Length: 633
Image (cartoon, rainbow, N blue to C red; front, top):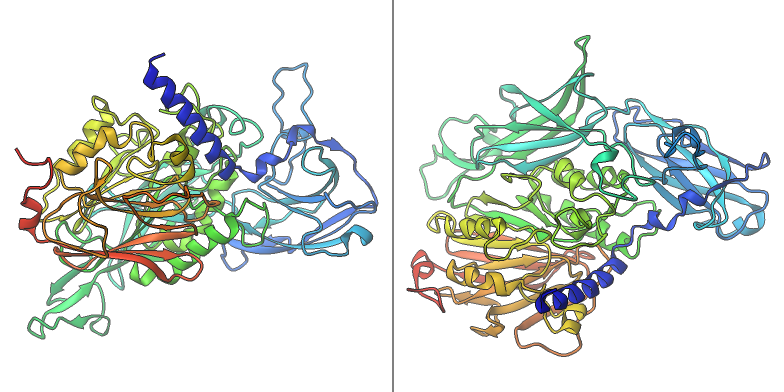
């Protein structure tokens, strides 16, 4: 092994060990394969109501009452789907081997004593748990013996949704051209059962029908356990439709076709007959059954994207490592509940002032428990159904030994990127690679994939250079680089311990490109905190950090926004010269382009939505053309 490779391997091992402590999937604490039967006729579990979604809802709350004649402090309730989770659905490795009592993990769990102070004495308990439509029925089981030696005591009645196969949880994403929006959703309908499509059009205008493609994957598509074993759950069918030839977000027109006159406003710098249009589209998801019946989702709406170079207000939220959490408090993820839900809720509250979201890796921390992808898409539905929700890939989506990932870690739980690239759409040339460019008005976003090799000579390096070099800065003055792992600068404790303050070989491979092509900002996740640097090049501040920068480009400012939900990461105690602002809390970033010359960045805390750090950039086109350090002939 080459010396640099040995050092890098040791560094990666330290980083991944630290990261694993933050990303433990709570369902992995359950030793499913050790479950034994201990059914007690005196015990019972009852769930009500038995039917959810009577008015078309995609989620609902269930009251679970249970009784254990011999209670203990480590008893717990597991939520299973499909409801029949007995040995009958297990797949023995060979005909001579009997299947275990259980072969699948629950989709969520909660300890029996949760908010039941008297459970230890009476054995009586009550939980209120939230379910989402996940294509199958549900049951609730009472276990004793804790999570490591589960004993199945009693099972409830079944609970189901009115239409468990209904189309749910739409996810919008930018298409491969600026005037194309994609909508992806999940259903229980195979293409042989029903034809998927989207009905869409301008608000109060003509409606169109666009067909959808269908994808799915099976257990054998997974790379290892638990994704192929106790974590496996059929993902359903993932449909994507392409809505093309959209009118741009805002236009000055005489003839109104998108909104009524009362919903538009006169632009102050034009004649009163010209009105500023905010072109909004409505859509709903549909499936046509063989008998001609159509199954519909509820209706949603979105704004079309601005055209390249459009000079209008454009606002993009950026974060990484949010994960999912349960509103009912179940699963007891390590500090995820407050961060993940607060971030989600703050974005929902401010959704009228947000045009796009970029989630740069570590999406839901399913880690091989496939049911959690449904849970996450349900959590973000109010956001992703309304604005494009663009994702990048992180270690908890991709990494698995021997599968071609840059890191041979177990972080994906055997998923090796398959669920992420199927559940969400990205405008990548090869969705398995997960690197891509997307333009939004005055922005060019170059989204890298740190779980694949990015060094010079690789396919990804060529993509990054092409993405940065091909932008027309007259149209898109704001050039943004994004990646999951920190390829720039971070004073996080495990990077500081190694003395790298970055992912090994990160900025060494890319900083010349950032400087040459004048990348304004670089964003990263992976590290679960917030940090902003000065404009920095080769570990030196080119100019002092400030809340306002103007004039010609000098160097890239690097921002870590990995504190959207996962348990937080410590900083080193010493102050680093290029580190300007650090925050050990949950939060996210927001970019606002006012025009071609003025850009605002804000860091907001998830707990209250208030701004705790910010800076502006004022720059004209001639400033972009001007020389800076090491980027002129």
